[in-house]
Length: 267
Image (cartoon, rainbow, N blue to C red; front, side, top):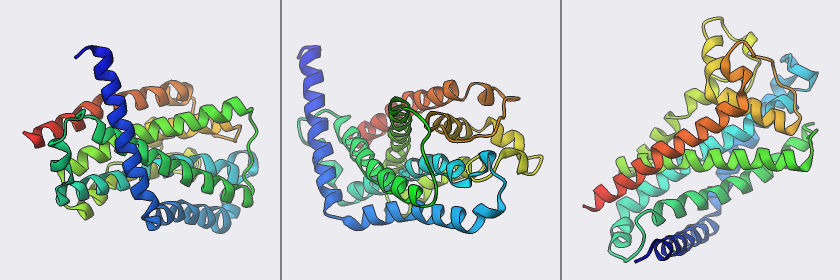
């Protein structure tokens, strides 16, 4: 089989698997509901309850908060991927896929793309709630699309970590929690909820060098929302570069790991 035929075969299989998973998500609306309601609660809680007591850059806490919640939403979708892959492993669905003449990477890539659709729906609902609490965009349409593209690229990269965990931990409950455990410390030890200079002194260097802080700062910049200047660190001086490096490294590391784990399980 030629390279072009192999690529077409892989793309076709991936499309089929992504369509299968999207249909499955449409038949389980509770997954969409709970995936969406969690970040909405974060927005209402922090913007409505704590927003008035937090001195945010620019004076509008909702505009400071929302880009970080967008990043958190796509990061926490890792739990859906990890749990779904583990469920398929437990039910023997993966074994049936392995017996079919299809590209090995199509199953996991299709899962990752389907979860991107889920993240896109959640981000849309979240943006509407953000507008209600005072968040506004101060950027061009092209910049907004760039922010959305970065968020989805980060979500796609993160989903491969969830896939790897789901293939390694067969129990869906454990896979969900184990997947979240990989991102929760990075999300909360960042500049998401409060400016870095309000954190305890020993936490400030961690937050400044946290790659998630660079991602959040980049999204804030692309959306024209206020951000804190943390230029005394490399991620603070070059958040866009760090954000792209993080996404690229995650994909380069976990795509081969997840596909390799899938093949080893087949063997």
